[in-house]
Image (cartoon, rainbow, N blue to C red):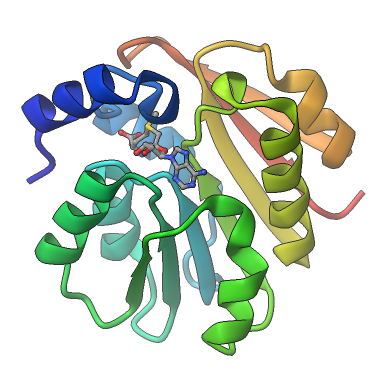
Length: 187
Ligand SMILES: C[S@@+](CC[C@H](N)C(=O)[O-])C[C@H]1O[C@@H](n2cnc3c(N)ncnc32)[C@H](O)[C@@H]1O
């Protein structure tokens, strides 16, 4: 089970990278995943899984022949996930999110149907934030979706520069309350 104590401990060590004091709620997880057609999504990418609250839900919903690439840069979270999750459909990658395309090529997956991101974009330097958004956009199929949560609307203008079609939802049922951006690649 995703562990709240371990999350808080990692937050104190790496505040900007971890970006939250607690794992997301099941309400936020539901909102993040509700616009994904899991019967059609065959290649899924998750950025910044932390202790894996969304990863577990994605795996419950994913088709048996779908593949999930998970990018986690933090050593302890990544090791925890690798030890806990043994599902053959998932590759847990200890590397940074802007390398999506490199790993899609490595695993011969073509383009992604959906990118689900929990990355704390507002904490990132401009260059890293832009390269992750660009890499996510490039990695998607023409009808692909990028779904991102944030605790503020600070990143809205940056996301809109890369994705023309962006809708924003909100849930108060998370600590802190969160905005969910759903972005379509197609204009
Ligand atoms: C706000 S936490 C979200 C964790 C989890 N998805 C949740 O909602 O509870 C952000 C996560 O992104 C990870 N992260 C930060 N920068 C990253 C990067 N460049 N590439 C991959 N993961 C990164 C952090 O280590 C952390 O696990």
